[in-house]
Image 1 (cartoon, rainbow, N blue to C red):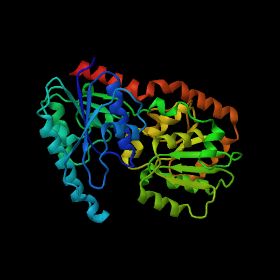
Image 2 (image 1 turned 90 degrees about the vertical axis):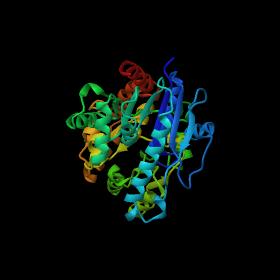
Image 3 (image 1 turned 180 degrees about the vertical axis):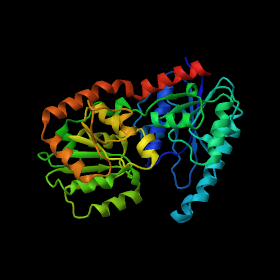
Image 4 (image 1 turned 45 degrees about the vertical axis):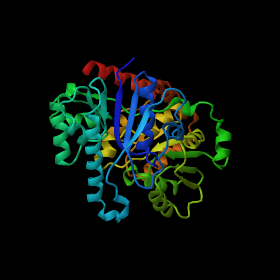
Length: 387
C-alpha cells in the first residue's frame, strides 16, 4: 500500500484535449497501483461537471479502484474575449487555480504526497514534504521558472515527461538527481476486445479494399497535421482518417483539406471510437513540426503508445521528442514539414508488407512497459524513494 496521493492539474475535465485524457487515465492508474488518489482539476465555465464515476467512464477507464475527484474554483473569463486578447485572462485563470489549490493543499496531511502539474502550485507549496512536480514542458515565463527552482531547492522532486524536458531543466540549473523521466502511456483495456480490422473500417465508414493511414490526436498547428493533408494530395489511392481535435482546429483543417475526397476528418470522438479508428489503420502517423520546443523536444505523444498497443506501424517526424521513445526498429522517420518525403515513405511502406509486419511486432513487444499501470508503479516507487 502506498501513501495517499493528491494529484493537482489545471485541466478542464472533461474536454476535447489529450491533456484531460492523460490526467484521468494517469490518476486512475495511481489508484489501481494502491495509492489512495484524489484528483483536483479546474472548475471551468461551460463544462459539464461530472461525478467521479461518470468522469472516468467518459475516459474509458476500467471499473474498479478509482480516484476521488474535486473541482477547484478559478477565475475563468478566457472564452468571453477574442482569442487575440486571451493572454491576461489565461494568466488570471492559471494563478487563481494555483492559489486556491495550494491554499487547500496546505490543509492535507503531511503523509499525503502531492503531485502537481503546475509550477505555480509547487512554488506556493515549496518546503512541503512529499512534493512532486510533473512537467510536460520547461516553463517559459521567468516567474514560473523561479517558482519551480525555489520549489526544487526546498526539496521538491520532478517527473519530466521526456528526455528533452529533463535536459533543459538540468541546463536551467536543477540537479539531475532531482529529476526522473516518465513518458506518457496507454490504457490497455481500451485496446482489448476491439473488432477486427475489416469491422473497424466498416465502423469508421472506410473502403475495405484501399489502404488506410490514420492520425489520432489534437490538431494544434505544431502537431503538423496540415503537413499530412499536403502529403495526402500526393496519394489519391490512400484513405486518410484524421481523428480528434478541438472544434476550431477541426474547422481550419477541413478547409485545408477541401477537395480531397479520400481524407476524412472526424473531429473529436470518445476514447472508445478513437481506439476503433486506430484499429482500422495500416499505418499511424505522427507528423510534428520542427518548432516550437514542445513539438521538437518535449512532447510525449499518446498516439505513439496507443499504436504500440495495437502494433500499428508508425511513421514519425525525425525529432528528438520521437526518438526519445522510438528507434529505427520501431518506426520510420521522415524530415519534419516535408509533405513530399512523408508521402514517399508512406507509399513505400504500404507496398512492403514484411516491413510493416516487422515494425508492428517490434512496437507491440515494447508496449507492456508503457501502460499507465506500469508507469504509475514506477513513479510511486520513485516517489517513495525520494520522499
